[in-house]
Length: 241
Ligand code: URA
Image (cartoon, rainbow, N blue to C red):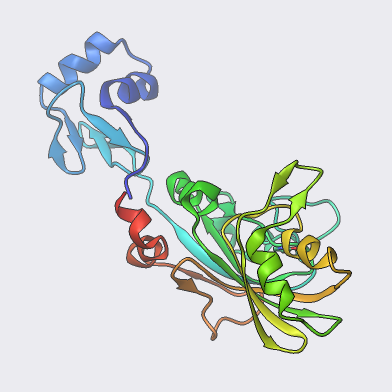
């Protein structure tokens, strides 16, 4: 999946604080390399992860980064929190200021949290229009009944947001255990859906996003960097659109 593109000449002009006319000369004088190749034109498009050099000096060298983390209970899905540890606090310091969180989990929810510096990837995952499924295992305080399956599929009206939730799949695994598949991420969504029937969610664990499953070898609080192939495979067909 390509990142949003913009013009090479504008990038050099801004970075070096020089007039655009001078940038054109630099390109014509074959002093600019783009991903190791001579820049071809002032109109050339680059993106967040294009490597650019001028006279051998690196102007831009950002690598795409994708991380999965196994979120423990009692951790906030935010960059900063005055009271509690955040998922960012669980990462090594060299990653902390590079990444943003892709879709949150509640304070007491556990499981798969994704982080990246690639805005296009996070958007493809988070945007409800892409309908990328997120998979949760839930335990509840009352026996689950089959009529819930239909109710989850039909959707629930959330008065605060004035929306009806997208069809969600509910699979009853055991009397008090279900798997829920969502294609959107509204505030406390699963708790509110069960809450409609006075059913309390006791534990909520996200085990997969799209085609990416949380590594079962990853202990709570641990993370792993994903390869670009894994990141792309997470999105399935969306990666090529
Ligand atoms: N739905 C919830 O209620 N909580 C979560 O953390 C995720 C989905």
